[in-house]
Image 1 (cartoon, rainbow, N blue to C red):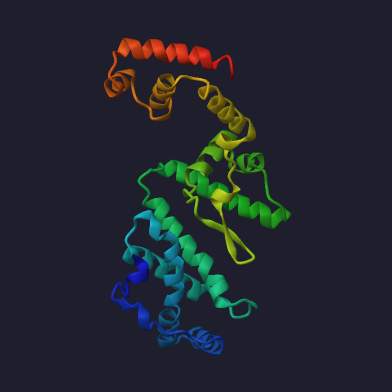
Image 2: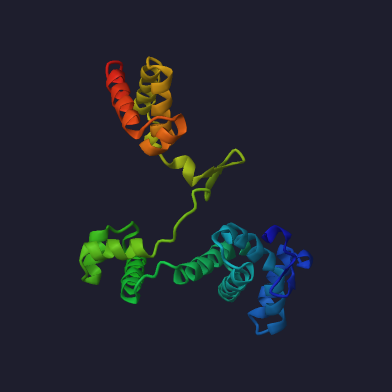
Amino acid sequence: MLINKVEICGVNTSKLPVLKNSVMRELFSKMQQGDDAARDELINGNLRLVLSVIQRFTNRGEYVDDLFQVGCIGLIKAIDNFDLGQNVKFSTYAVPMIIGEIRRYLRDNNTIRVSRSLRDIAYKALQIRDGLINKNSCEPSVNEIAKELNVPREEIVFALDAIQEPVSLFEPIYHDGGDPIFVMDQIGDEKNIDSNWLEMISVKEAMDKLMPREKHILSLRFFEGKTQMEVAEEIGISQAQVSRLEKAALSHMRKYV
């Protein structure tokens, strides 16, 4: 588990430094003047960001060391592209870049392989989407993207779906009063709608009208998933008798359901 792992890629995570914002700005100024030592210090001083991000991805069966290395690539890109003139904290800028780098790695190394041509269409579609947003200041439709790319709408939809990364049901969407709201909290459960509850109550009441042996046979068959032969062996009668009793019990239940 990551939580118990102190050394990752030869880095002792328990001794990672934390840089104050004033120190960070000073180091960025030096780095942008060509000071490589300041750049190295910025990288080492922000490795905790990488560590915090990769904990979101540790349930996917990937090696922590691999995720850490990929996250460091995202961190380095963020450091090299950070604009001191923007009124934003470095962590706010860097975390999405680290996450994006890790997601690209997971997508490209996914066991579900997506063809190169399909990925190319998807990436071009995303570039055109960004261009249209900048131009029109609104989200373009799939039809507009397809027209710009001169590709059928269906291919655009299929390509974009193909590169989507699977999301865990336990992925937090946002926090409400300190408690995380997960993806699974936003998904409807069609099995537990009111009509199904009423049906279950009706079935239970109908089964209560049966003789004990008939009730036992239906419980074994339809709630425990056993075959008629398995039921016959368990209660010590023939499979033909089980079949007759089952049919009679179901016929009797239909009067009450």
